[in-house]
Length: 197
Image (tube, rainbow, N blue to C red; front, side, top):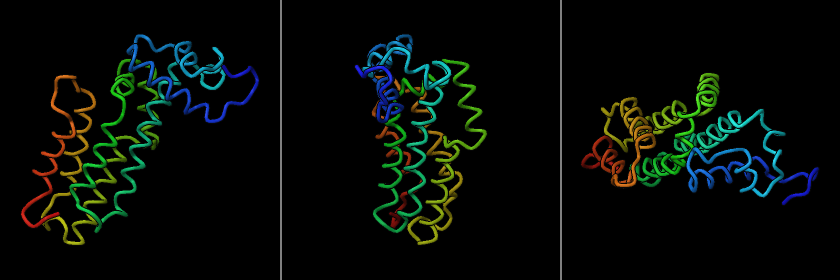
């Protein structure tokens, strides 16, 4: 355990990673500040030293994880003209679907944390809206290069893809088909036509 009063490098990320492990092992009911700090091998009170409470911690965890996916999406437009359109969209889908379902569920099951997440998104924090905008910008760039059909409704495709990812994250079950396979079928139906990449 880290000694009291000694700065812990990357503490925030360490606590977030620990929370994901607790959620995977014990579910949402097992997520307490003590469980997180014990898993992170930190002093019991360190979470409350850096966050106003467990709800703020959960909100920041959710926002951080969505921010990661939004950064992957933001890099998409620069990839236009390279690789295949389908491969880029599937890579993004994999990044979004790699969000821990337990973390996503927390955004719904803890009302105070959920309200903080919605407020942050409304204020411009990256979430599904940012991912959708990046997908649309990427598809516009690919359409301009002639790598998608000229009549492709990029706004509808971006909405369909991100809406599907949202649905798969929120409703995933262990007995469901692998979500990436479902997204592959969707991308094929929406974007890939004969002669398209």
